[in-house]
Length: 129
Image (cartoon, rainbow, N blue to C red; front, top):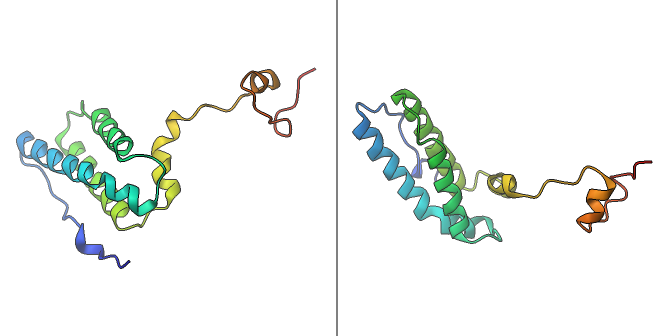
């Protein structure tokens, strides 16, 4: 598969008003939303497209309360870059799966926690005396 780096390239823009920033944000959100099935197929992920879409929504919601217009422009630029990297296969599977790292169960700290979770990590976690 050949990648065309300029296919998704965007020129850095400054929003003149909040309406323009909202329109750019909606456009970017739609691009991410439509790209979710393509990301799943490109990286052969074992997660459905709706999980990717949920993560995208979560990221946009996390920055919902930003009140500085220049900060919004920077966030949009970074998100455009992230989308371009994802769709041009410039990321690795681990970069994509890092989006889901917060949802993983934390590893147990002691032998009893490991035992209660039915994990056999005896080489890593030593019983306390």
